[in-house]
Image 1 (spheres, helix red, strand yellow):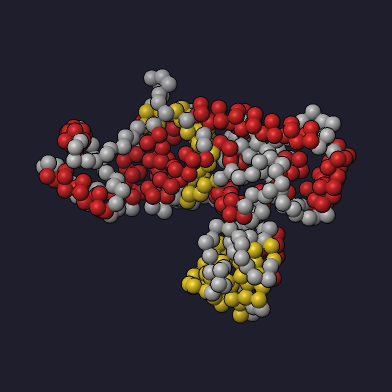
Image 2 (cartoon, helix red, strand yellow):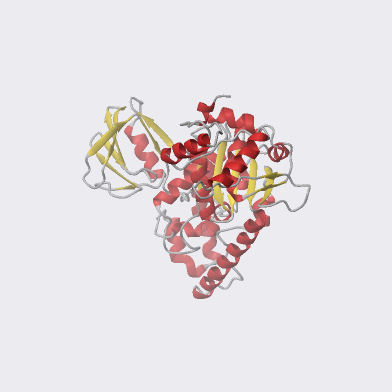
Length: 422
């Protein structure tokens, strides 16, 4: 396994050992971010790591790299931000909510185990306020042969925000046809068809929502919610109280009091819930790592300013006689205020000599510059470095191996890192 080998390589790295011993700062260049996370996870198999990046694009990139490097050795999810603006009359898509709920469930999971848990996110997503009951809602795993009263699943789907329809066509919908329940789970590319025989799940098949035909049977499905913010009794009570403070919002608040969901309902979360963010709920032995710490702080400031402009404009449009409305996101200081996890500031270069450095550099192999690259590799070999080269394809890998061997530098092609041996 890749995990076993990378753990032995990482155990002697000072930039990793310092963090494990409580260091609050470390320098890691951008090329090494995914590798650093992978090695840290290999050394902390029973801990949780929340990796925060300045932008959604960087978070996406590192998440993809991690999935490739980790080879399913860790539990990895990406916490994305809503794709909507504060108080916009549009709800986040079901696919975004489904992805968020999977990541939040992993981040909030208190159970210990032998697999590290990594949540990759952006400063925008991690700064977003959450409903108070976010930890209460869990995904539902259904397996072929399970004993389930179909009504239990129907109730779960309704509570999770799925819409009951005649025929499933979009994410977040479900349909009932006799002893069959069709569900279009947000993070699935195809619909899931549960066929019941009494109270037993007789079969689970994935189907094409376009022609409704079953395509392939599966043993297990994981049903995630498609509504992050739900109307609870507490939310209704808060909405009732807000009618006094914001009488001009009475029509909208009455709909919430009546239990009605509507497009853009989620934007009312800051008004209707006590303020809480994900970092408020992490354990002491977890890590929160800010990749490019200074940029994360700056991006947080920009997000708060952008939201403030939008909210102030809405306050005037709604003619509300209040100084300000609550924002969807919290500022950087509030984000970390109640966090008891170990917070690590990661810089792209060492700000001073006291900060240990972890670095990786990309190598481009071509005939024109291969001699220079070979000289670099020969120098590392002379220093007893163990060199592992990740190629973009089997063809590239075999070409690199042939070039190295032609220069009398022994190299082997491997499908996984395990093929190298010890």
